[in-house]
Length: 126
Image (cartoon, rainbow, N blue to C red; front, side, top):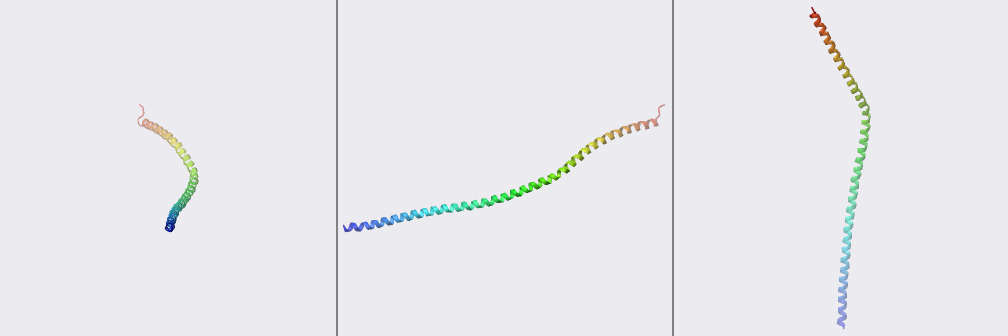
């Protein structure tokens, strides 16, 4: 029976070593899996920070554009007075053209009468 007692410690040691190797391997696997997850999370955090910086830049650009549009509105508002003056001048020019047209017709009529009088003086009726 002495031989059987000696065989048990060897198998017991082998089993203990196998279990120790198993636990070490599982522990290493879990550790690496957690490290991979941690690396993924760190990458995601860096990406989020980069996107936040980018969007902050977009916010600055949008703010600048808003100020620019407000300045353009203020400038265009100052042009309203000039646009009204141009419209008034255009209306006056239209009225002036109508008066000139009437005067042109009147002058043409006077010219016709003068030519008729001139011809009567050149050739008096007999």
